[in-house]
Length: 68
Image (cartoon, rainbow, N blue to C red; front, side):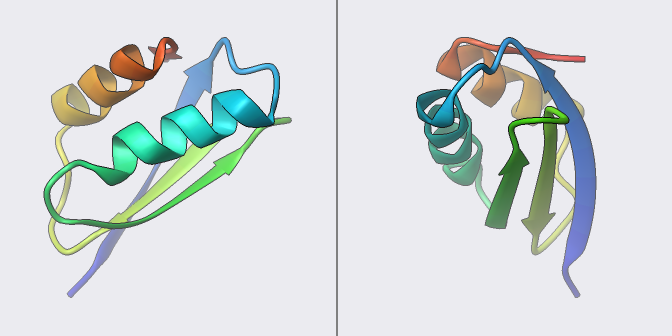
């Protein structure tokens, strides 16, 4: 059963930002999909099992942005 969680990321200003966040979050074990909405800053993470806030935060930090 897949789960979907929505997070908010600050600091994204362009499509390159979206691509960076999508790539880093997509590398988390179990993640099957990442949808980033630049205008709202929302990041929807779909995964095989729930993904921890710590994992998402670390991936977003690695991309150069901040999880709210």
